[in-house]
Length: 418
Image (cartoon, rainbow, N blue to C red; front, side):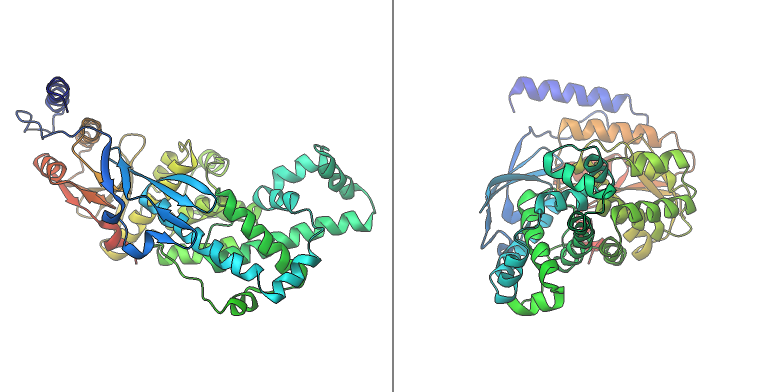
């Protein structure tokens, strides 16, 4: 950092700290680092996860003081992935793709692929990912092939009717295979969708159940993901129910948590949440029995303006629920600044759960800390404040936080997830 930048950043930080009533250490700001920060992938992943048969992660990682951005060379080209948890999701998908390709090479699947060669796979994919919206589009006659299916809804043509029934059956098969591969059936990563669609289409054509399919390649699907027991049960719910059914199930759960109807509708209508992500988030909140004001978390969650933010908030809910179940029971959820929900436990301590990769002493971080502390000062029923951060915290950031009254728990993911 240049001397001018350092002086300017330090002056801004001093101003922020002086205006924060909770801060008594305004005389000396912590040392600041300039972003972007260059890190190494091996700091965050074991060696056996850095590459596989169809991918290799670049050693150089870019961090903005909060989140890592990884570059991956894949058999489908180079991609960038933000956050370590989402990287692990992608690695799991790469491993699943390897198994899918092996399945398609077996005799049982080769025969089924020929049977299903005439099936309109692209339209089937649409019916799986957005069944209500897609059927509406079909009925309106958009696209020549869609128009044919649309007419089948109103006609007695046995072939067209059979196409629609096949598509519905395909949706259930696809969810079952996604569950066995331990991947999100609604993943936005197109190469995975294409492989999963091909395998599911062949499985449907040949009546191949997942158990038989996996025995054909003599492999049991593994996972690199760290999840909770609640997430496991929610994944079964996704496997066994259509998106429309999941929406009804999630709405009932939220209603039972006293979430207002307007918030329920806003959350379930936020398309940045796939049915998978929405179900996992709601399931984690449901698991937090006897915790008041869970509606506060939903109020923050409806603000997600991208799939990545939705993913981040789902992870936040999982961290919070795991703490409630494993460490200490929560008392209530508090919306502190309109974006971050805190869990207040019985002794009145306020805890923020942040799925961040690498927290450094940057001007943006201290601006956020100042905002949070200022908001917390307005809460009379608070005995202390904690930050549970999923990843790493630098020594300077930790020291600065502790001087400002925070208890810092880093590498929290290892403590909260199995």
